[in-house]
Length: 463
Image (tube, rainbow, N blue to C red; front, side):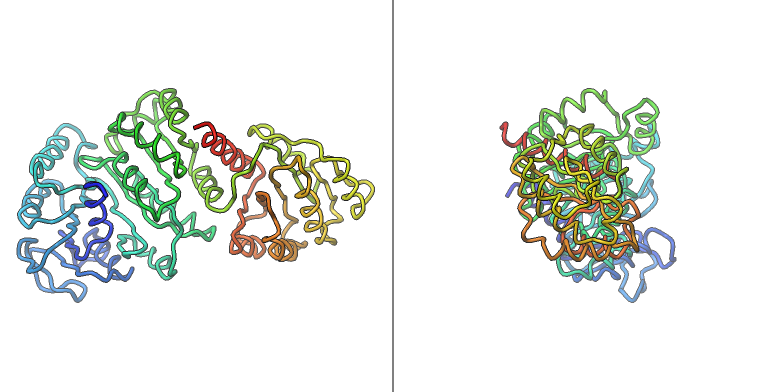
């Protein structure tokens, strides 16, 4: 295990944490982050640091980190920016393993803030202490229950997490991404809010998660990439073992300007990023929905062996739209074999479409078993690599259809995805997701997710 991995392991799995700037006032960062650690069930030692000492949230507080009697693995700094250099020196004197600087007011604010950021780097030079931030929201780790977001306590009630890590140069997107996955029944394993990246960068976290045997999928929101040569090397190596999905923002002049004021990120040409991602096998997402969709697909859907998709639907309009979406995403919608078409005609109305898409007509609402039979039938077609199913409307057979499909899950030997355009809150959708299926809210999003899986498989085969 590399030195970088060892250092980051200490940060993600600390045995003791000091909160510098711990507060007794709800709403202040030093209070909220301390309370989150407690609410989320962190089992290590917690040391609130506050010049007034006393107790905070029933924990003994200390005037300085140097007054803490025991070893401190991780120091979390939540004090005004001008004080950060002073407490950083104290952290170095204490010999902490890692530091997370939550405070803002550094290079993202201009020259004075940049000098302050450089001062921190110089203070820690040669100490071996690694820093996350400044201007960040910290980390989340399911196995160690380290979280600075109280709402994560809901997720931590689950014994197991899913093997997904998230790197973000936006703190708020860390929690949003975690919540959006949780809404689809998926529990993020780790995230890191990298902030200004004065020391550790997104490229370093990519290397760390690439070497983490627990992590099978790496997702990221980036406004720029520092350590470009190292990124190329790491991405090319890691993408052969596990998918890397990146939402690269700051694509336009306005976006690049906003990125600089957000985390002092200097964005290069978007064309360059496209070329780098293609060269290294990185999957590019164009927004939060695609970032979530692609992550869900890689977790739950096997790689299709080819580009041919069969579409099954009750209503005809969405079936046509799915055919368009599939071909626009780069998939093929071939005509089903005569044998398959004849099998479908045995139970479908004479006016149903059986060539592909399979348009079962609205009569399928009263005959939801057709979904199961049609799926079994097209799965056997040797020219079909995957199946996209448009579910019936809620209250009109959706839940019954979901239960039938769940019963057959183990018999499906080809990738299958579902579309429910009525929303993710429906009981049938929840049942399918709990069973490990992927359900998308539109045919376009389902088709793009399948196409990404195909392209990644083709990339792996070309190596």
